[in-house]
Structure formats: structure tokens, C-alpha cells
Image (tube, rainbow, N blue to C red; front, side):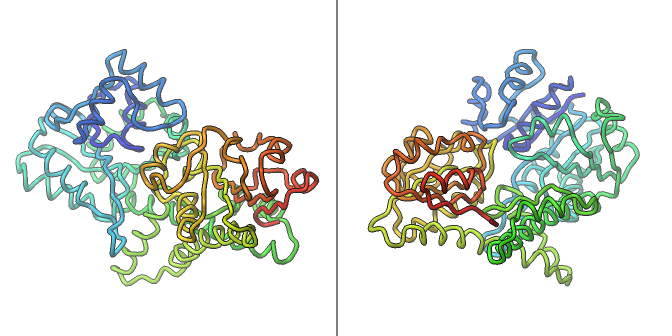
Length: 432
């Protein structure tokens, strides 16, 4: 199948590489010339575990191509996937649809033969109708269908999730479009759940799923606060909860709050859509407010640990919003760093993958270390903000030698608290 993918970000590029690996001819389209030039030169433009090897393999075997030309990517395609950003509007927080609308309008001109247009970006309910209308207006004679094909790729695990999906949701209003998507995902037939629903239902499923998971994270963080006050252990509590099949164990790990490119954006967009439809969604609104406050609470814990130290030096481990990615969008770690900087903190940070991304956001306002031990040199407090496996191996004896004051605020509960206390550290985890 010939596939065009508009957008080469954290959704478009892994999807393109994955579809090429399945044997399709894939052309990825992006307006950003420098990004396409880099990809053509064999330089991957984002970090995802396992992505680079598949990228080079499929480029070498001639199934994966890159262009800035919409015509080149769309003409004669059986399927065109729109995977551009839908960032929150700076005021209303609704999903900004300008990139979706621009892509739909531009691609319309180059449709030849029957083509399925799939929106893989997370889009408001009714976007499929809008895309359909824009294409018809620009090219009244085009033979096409618009489907909703929401992505459920976890950043850091996008390659794994592409090849091992727990479900594939398709919002298609015609049998002809359904058959094209069935053919696309034929390699997964019998291996996963494929759900065909109305287009508007598909668009809602993505928002409903992300909002629910965000609420679950906010809930366990509130329970962690309760455990700290009462002497309970949040991990024992979450394990007991997770054994209930109605609840399940996933997304019951306490931490500094949810972040990334999806949950913050999608909860705010869901809240906006609810207001537009006169629906009161109190749970989602409470999660949004509580999650924002969570980052401030974590920053205050770090500052409280060094409040009696003059000009304290803060060591930060982790800048990405989660492990396995270099993405710092809406990263709890970066928001906590921002709160600390507002208080005039002296920060040195290290992250295995996200140093360059973080530097583009905060520049020289913080110092950057080459490894997790260099960051500890003469530090007054260590703050662990991202759950990289590498940080679990931190040698506390070595940390003891390097740090000026023995204080650890572990916002991810990666360190053995008992061992830290036995070595003389003032250790503070989450929910214990």
C-alpha cells in the first residue's frame, strides 16, 4: 500500500517507520526543510527506543522516503495520514486546529483516485466533518473518505506499542474506507482488538482515554499525600487497589504529576469541549487544577529541604517528562525546575537523553552535567524528577562522598530509602 504521512513528530515518524516495516511504501511529509534534510541524510530527529535501527533498515530497503512536497507524498497514495500537532490555544486551551486545516486544504489538490484520509492527530469531536468539508471545497471532484485513526503510542515505547497494540480504533463511516484500513492492519489480524465505530465516537475515545488516565494519576498522587500524613505506604495501597480487576495496577504510581504532549493538552481540550456543549466535567477539571498544584508542591519540598542553607546548590536528575524519550513538553521535571528558578535556585541537571531539548527551553539558566555523578558534586540536595532506570543504579556511597549535604528528594521513589537513611541521608520519597 502507498501511504503518505503528514508530520514527522513523535506520532508521524514512528508510525511511518512502523508502516514501512510492515511492507508499505511510505512517504513522510514535513514543511520544515531542516528536519527533512536531516532525515534524508540518515539523522533521526527524535529519540525513541528501537526507532533508529528500523529507520535505517527501511530507508536502505527503499520503503521509507521523506519530502517537503505535499504533491510528492499524496499523489497516487492509497492512504494519507494527518499526524500534525494540535497544541493548546494559549488562552482558551482548546486544541489549535490550524495545522490540521492547513494540511487538509493543501492535500486536497493532489488527490488522485480513491484515497482514504486518516486523522491520527488527537482532534476535537467533529474534526472529521471539518476535514471532509475542506477537501470537498478545495477539490469537489475528489474521490475520498475521511476516517479517524487515533494513536495510542506511549512516548518512549512507541515502537513496541506500534507492533504490539492493545487495540486499534477506527472511526469510519463507509465500508469502502473500512476495507482500506483492514488491509493496512492485516498483519495484526487475530493478534489484537480492532474496533470499528462511528467517526465521532473514535475522536471521543482518544480524549476519554487520556482524560481517564490523567484522573487516575491525579487520584493516586492525592492518595500518596494521604499516606504521608497517616503512616500508610502508597505502594502497599496501590498494590492492593490494583489487584481489583475493575481498577487494575497501571497508572497507580505516585510522582510529580502527569505531563508530556498528551495528558495536559488533552484534558484541557476535553474540558473546553465539555463547556462548549454545556456538560459539567468536574473530575477532569479537578485533575487539571490538582496536577498543576502538584508540581508546585514538589518544588516546595525541594526548597524546604535546603531552606536553612545559604545559596544552596540543587542537583536534578531527569528533565524529560518520562523515561525512554527526549521530550520535555509539559514535563513535570521542567516545570519544577522553572518553579525553582523563580526562587533563584542554583541548579545543575543531568538527563540521559533530554539535555539538548531542555537546553532549548531554559538555555543557560541551569548548568548541565555529563553524568549522574558529576551533577552531585558539592550539591546540597538531590532531586530525582524522571524515572530513568539508570538512576535506580545510583551508588549512594559515591553520592555520599560527592554531595556537600546529604539530602534527597526522590519524586519517583527510585532510591532505596532505608539504605539512604542508613548512610546518613535525609531521604524523602513520595507517599511513604
